[in-house]
Structure formats: C-alpha cells, structure tokens
Length: 215
Length: 215
Image (cartoon, rainbow over all chains, first blue to last red; front, side, top):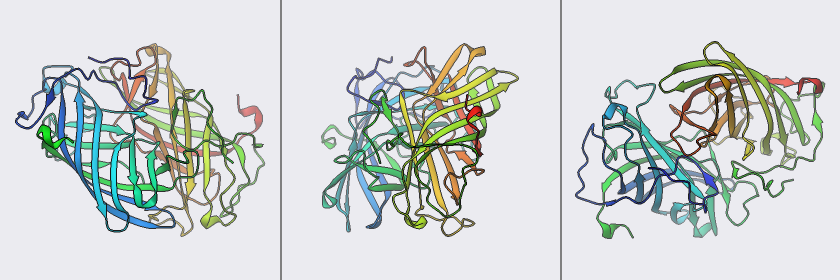
C-alpha cells in the first residue's frame, strides 16, 4: 500500500503512496459515500491565485490545467471509517496575466506533495454527517518568464476540500489555507530573500479528463 | 547575513540565518517600532495544544518552556521597511497531561524551522498602522512516553503572531495556523498511517530568560 519514498525527494510533506495502480480517465464513475479502488485520478483543476511581488504589486491570476493524483486503497470498506492517502504526482496549471504575462505552475520535483482524506474530528455545520475532509500539502514551481524567475515555496501550500462526499471530490470547491502570506523564493537565488508571496488561493476540482487532455 | 544551510537538515522550511551572533538574555531591552541588532533571543514560551489520537481520544495539553530564536540583521534601519529572518534553533516545551502523562516537545533535527517578520500586505483592523506580522514554520518532535511514541509532523506547524510592535514580540499572543487537523507520524513507523493529529495550538511568547533558565 505504501512504499518508502522516492529517494529523489528531499522534502516529504506526507505519506508516500504506491504509484503502481491504474490510470483513471473520463468515464470512470464517481460514487458517493463509497471508498474506491486505488488508482491515479487524472482530473481538471481551475484556480484563482493572488500574488504579492514586493516593489511590483498585487496580481490576481486565474489558472486552468490538470493534476494527477495517486490514491492508496482505502483503509476500510466502510465509508465512515475509510482513510485514503494521496500523492500529487503531476500538475500543470497555466495562466495568462495581463501584467505578469504567462505563468505556468508545476510540482517542485524536490518535494513529495502528499495528503489524505479522512473523517474530520470537527464536523462543520452544513456538512453531511458522513462528509470527509481532504488536504494536500504541495510544493510548487511558479514559472514567470516576464519576471525572469521561477519561484518556489518552502512552506507547503495546504490545499483543502471540505464536505467531501465522494473520492475523488470531483467538482468540489476548495481553498489554499494561506495565513496572510506564503513566502516564495527564487530558484536562482534560493537562500536570498523571498521575491514574492502567495496571499490567497481558491480552486475548483474538475472531473476526470480524457488521456489526450493530459499533455 | 545568511548562509547556505546546515547540511544535516533534510527539510528546509524557510531562509537560513547566520547563527554567529550574540546570545540575548534577561535585561535585554525590547524597544517598540525599532529594528534590533541581530542576535539569539532566549525566550519563555507557553502553549495550549489539542491532540487527537484516533481510537484513544482528544487531549488538551498545556506546555511551558523556552525557545532560542536566531534573528538576522534587519534589512532596513526604518521599522516600516525592515524585514527580519528567523530560525528556531532550540525549543523545549514540557507538559504533564492527566491522560497522556508527561509530554516533551522539541525541534525535529532533520528540519530547519524558519520564519520571518515583515509588514503584512493586508493590515488587520485593530493593528497599529506600522504593526508587522511574524510567522515561523516548525518541525517538531512530540515525545509521549506513556504512548511509547515520539511523534513528528511533515506539514510544518505555522506559528503566527499578529500586531507585532517590537522584535522580539515578547509577551504577545500567537496561534498555530492549523486547518482542522495536522497529521503526526510515529518516528518508529515513519511511512505508516498518522498516529495522531494536532488540531489546535495557541501560545504566548514570554520575555527574555536568564541563562540558567535555558537547560
């Protein structure tokens, strides 16, 4: 079910998951309240990010793209008791900002971006009694050619989805849990001062994509 | 001002800071709205943590102890423009829980726990116009002998202090920015399922301690 981690990864944000499981594309059923078999979800993703670049300004940027998420088998066949572990193994999000130009966000290959889905200890009002909470800790690269920089984060971006009624939570809205500002560093000057900050992130998980939509 | 990181650290949560600066103890003045010289702050700390241990229960635990924080020189002599980078180089927090017995929290030596103090992009109502925001990303070890386990986190605990009017923010309240549950793993089974979760953390920064109070 889990393996020792890929030795190329320097920073491990969660539990490693065995990637030797089937790829899942469009046509895969998404069933509520039912733990699924292990697999790799190929899903659309849309996000709205806010960046602060000191001395330059604040930028609201809309991204579209896809993620590939490998899921462990559920720890239990009963939904209520099931836990599922996830690794984000690929991401490509593309934006066109009027001020910053094109931006491409991918995974930082030095990080194992990882998360889990489980029943929360603090069910929220408005969530179904059996709704689960999903979290994923992510290391990103933000390639911004107009700035001549590729930025990366050292605190993981914590992506969360609440009120999860199916796995994957296709179509669900989510949020990056960023407190005020998440520092971003320049890959060409990794020990220097942060050159930007991520100050807000919202997203919508899409559904399963066709193989040809994963570039 | 900064150095390449200690090679023993596998996980780097922020910018490394040069530790070759004076130790500061009780008697050191704490001056408002004034960037200080670089130094190592030896400070008291008190915290209230909530742990969830699946299958065992929820535990509210009160810790007392100290931290040693190395600060970089400020990037500017003017308070408004000054940024200060910090590394948490030592921590010892001790609790006595009725249910869990003694708990000792220290730093995970594999992690560089790091943070910064800067003027926020989103000043809060109620903060002074020149108040700064402080954040620190921390990798911990929670030694709980009664459970026979030492737990560690892979998502850093993000400790934040708002409305910072002096550096260090001695006497200020702060919060761990934990969204619902932060997974904790067993050092003896690091690739296994999380064995506990940190679900809440509040703290009060103390003042400068005497050398003999740092054990």
